[in-house]
Length: 204
Image (cartoon, rainbow, N blue to C red):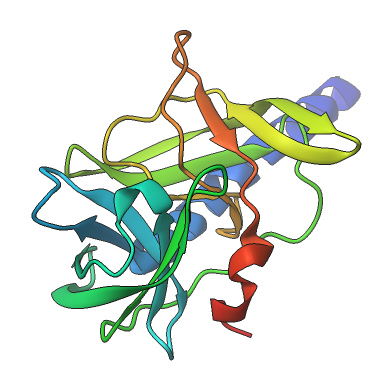
């Protein structure tokens, strides 16, 4: 009986730990996540801070146009503020990333260290239709060519406005950036973002 109880306890512990980790990760992500809006967009997109001192943010490239002023709106449990920002790096598809600079300084996130593997718990926070949303699940599929990841699939869906948001692990470290919409099965298809293309802008 004691052995059975011990086995059940071991099975339950990871799930309990995951729930604690999500709470901590969500708190960290909320501090860094912003709504990226401009006059051309009804609801806008999502972005997140990568360098608090310099005021750099990442979003999806298709959310902005090069040299186009963009307004960040922070809507977290802690701060509500708005500041104009400018595009300092624009990488069109297939990379589809943009780096923006603003006078709004928010706590910065950092890239995940370690492998991305099938079954990895991941989550995202974004402004779907302008509403703050949280989605969580796992990496369900991954495609690679010569050992280089090209895209992966998560078992939760994205909606309009979540583009540019952080996809993060249970520690609140960045796995990728939301760039693609959901497929016909309702799964989120994500390009394997080349964060190294923007490494000069991340905090040290």
